[in-house]
Image (cartoon, rainbow, N blue to C red; front, side):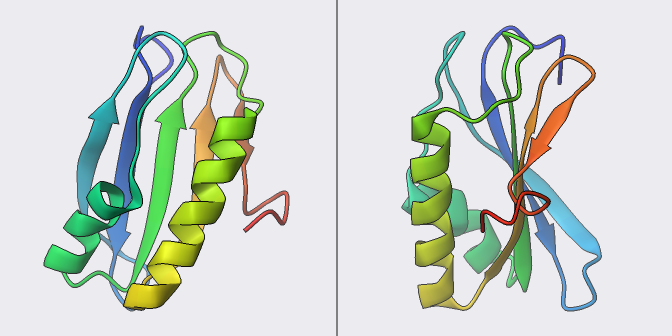
Length: 108
């Protein structure tokens, strides 16, 4: 994802044994932002009866440090997913040869 010039927001859907069952592009944004709504982000997981989900997006600038918007949408996604019984395992931001994991940083 590091060579992509726009922010792309993806999800990996997992079954009850944490095996990937599908992947979807949720949105494509601009150079430094992507619009994501929990309803759209969770729709594929509900449709595919996923047990859990991993969100991934890139930062075309190369710096994977989460913005305040990244932190806010992650909180909204986690809260929304709880309502429908889908566990968010991680939200990973990819930069140039680096990544940021909300799970690794205990921010979920």
